[in-house]
Image 1 (cartoon, rainbow, N blue to C red):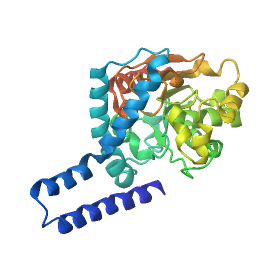
Image 2 (cartoon, rainbow, N blue to C red):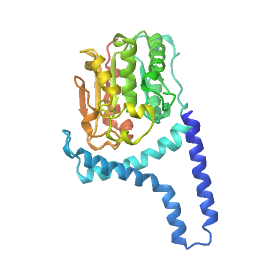
Image 3 (cartoon, rainbow, N blue to C red):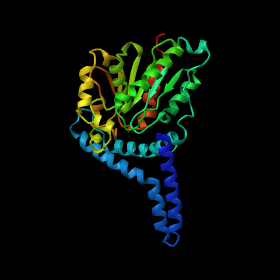
Image 4 (cartoon, rainbow, N blue to C red):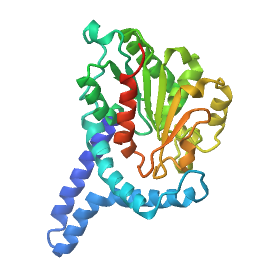
Length: 303
């Protein structure tokens, strides 16, 4: 569903660019160029506002505060990464690497698999670089699509449960779960609903608003309400969790995360919380320091 919606957005943008090209023929050249430039970098202006808000909110946070240079570099990187994700990978390449669940038995058995869980307004296409690497190494994996897009986070538990079951059946081992943003909360909801601690090896979250996200107050959809700081849903999830569950989690967070801030809100008490400074929200998905560490851990995983 999200892929079709984003395909429509891309088509609409192309139509608008074409209409501007026709309508602006009699305008001065600099105005024509300015119009085309706005289509190309308009999203970067929105991102700049997010970074300014993030820098303001992070003033009183416990995480190390990013300097101006780090903020500019993170903003530029996110401005490049975001169109690749939202205008190409998700709308047109979300099934370029389908779930790999039926390799030859000697390859699958005894080698731990991975379940990927994406975040808010995303689909499985965000994981393509990860899936490509796992494909090359013959790993079993599954990447879910969390739908309905704006539904309750609790409703995603069944999708995650099915993916975990498929990967575990293919390998004979509880999988590693890798989650971005809201996906980490969806996994916590699944663990609560199914008391599934023994069905997962470890959970890695990347930029997950474990304590809520400041920006969520401005988005009027159901799962965004759940992600507000100190929302009743988040409080109840924490209250229902067992004392040892967080020990299975490794949580990556950044002081340049332009979506999940204050920065320490991506930390989970009792987990291994790892600060990756200077990386924005979507760029964290492809940060070598994170990807390489997670995949190295997978290679060292006991059978």
